[in-house]
Image 1 (cartoon, one colour):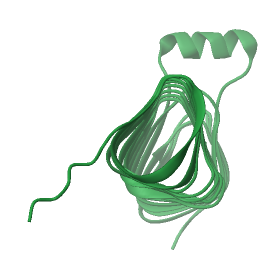
Image 2 (tube, rainbow, N blue to C red):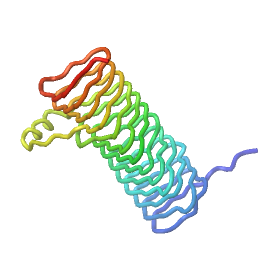
Image 3 (cartoon, rainbow, N blue to C red):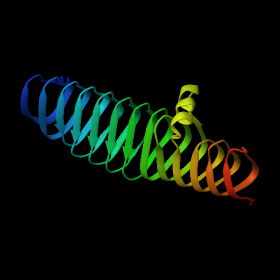
Image 4 (spheres, helix red, strand yellow):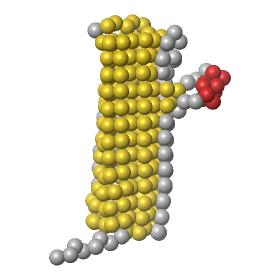
Length: 240
């Protein structure tokens, strides 16, 4: 027996629509969808309010959106603004605009060129940041690479490998002129390989640690190797 093909939901005016199963959801107007959604793809160029959403392939937001529930799916690209009031479970995040998650986020890879704010914990295998990332809870990853272009923070960071750099020569010149630099701020970083600049932390703990310029650290605990730039401020370093 052949499966019935799913229909599309296209919003080009102003209105309220039912939840359900769709192939494509396209928003160019202002709309609200009441009820849970399961779909193949979402394209939002307008303004939309949704409830729980499961998107199998990709959701792209060029306008503004509000998800009053969980957001789950394959990939999410945000060039506009999106707020998710429950957990974000997306395999691949690509953030060029602003994404706010109010109940944590997890997946495989997160690329942040804009702004990502997460209340709760965030867990991704690979995290690349060229914008601003703020996590109120634990930031957990296999690999993190940050080029600071806006403040980044997390309560704690657990990672296998982390690299933190300031961004570019122009950024450095502006920092010298204004006296203001962006930092990664956290209470604890714990990992295997840690190589950071412009980082403020109470404790950095790991196997191989390099503390670069602009860091302010109360305590470093290392197992195998440790080095610190003369332009960093480390109160105490001990081998454990």
